[in-house]
Amino acid sequence: MAQNRRDIDEEDEDGIDPEAPDPSDMDEDDGREDASPTDDCPYCGKQVYDPSEWCPHCGKYLSEEDRPMRLGWIAWVAIGLVTIFVLFLLGRGARVF
Image (cartoon, rainbow, N blue to C red; front, side):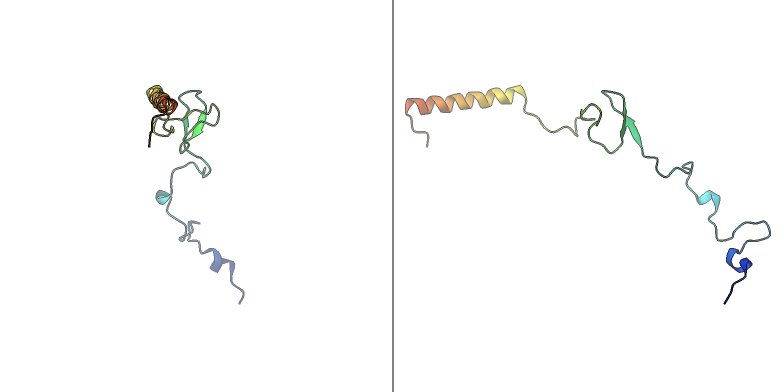
């Protein structure tokens, strides 16, 4: 039952393990597996992880696609005019419905 040390390690004459992967098959990442891709924030210039939608340092969105849609000033003026018109009709006693 006891195995010989030679049976476990199985190295050839050059001291190379035949079961080890070929160096050309390995990724060239300098051995750092924890390295995450980062970009610079276009507003504050600090490092931000690549999949982020907004900068945790300054709070701004990194691109227009990530920014939530906001109502422009024209939409707010239109909402205000409609509200004033409805209140005007209600104040005159007109039937709206």
